[in-house]
Amino acid sequence: MLVAIATSRADAGTPDGAAHLDTVRALSKTQDMWAYAGSSIFFCLGALLLNVLLYRSRLVPRWIAGWALVAVVPYLADACLVMFGALTISSEIHTLLVLPLALNEMVLAVWLLTKGFRAPSSALTADVAGTDTKSRAVGSAT
Image 1 (cartoon, helix red, strand yellow):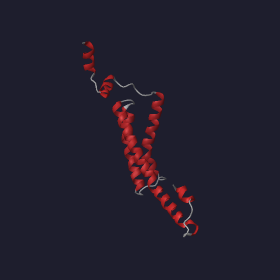
Image 2: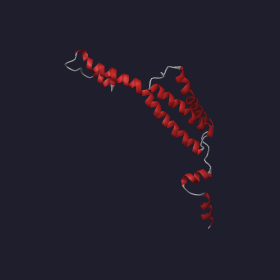
Image 3: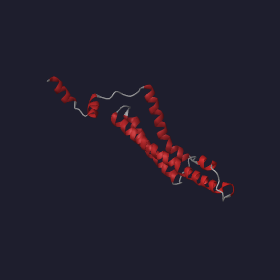
Image 4: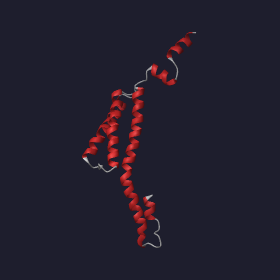
């Protein structure tokens, strides 16, 4: 969008396209203010959903998913602090708030590359499928 505005023809009444440059400046300032915070908030929502599912399904060790659920909180706090101007992305506090979730993602990646997913237990599989293992056993015996 910025490229399209910057390269479009200038208005006939303004010298050198000053109106277009003001629009580009306003859009880039808005992007600087909101892009990081907005994407971080949606990233936190995605990380929260993924790790709740990993925690409940026990596909990976619960300590990894639990660590991520705890580490989402400072990451979300960082996004809000950056959005309201209390922090900048280049500050050291920003790094400290983002670090726990970044480390968790690296540990999860190494875990999945080396060990893979655990096979879900039969009780969990039956619960997810909506059937009861006892009723299947009784049904097959008759």
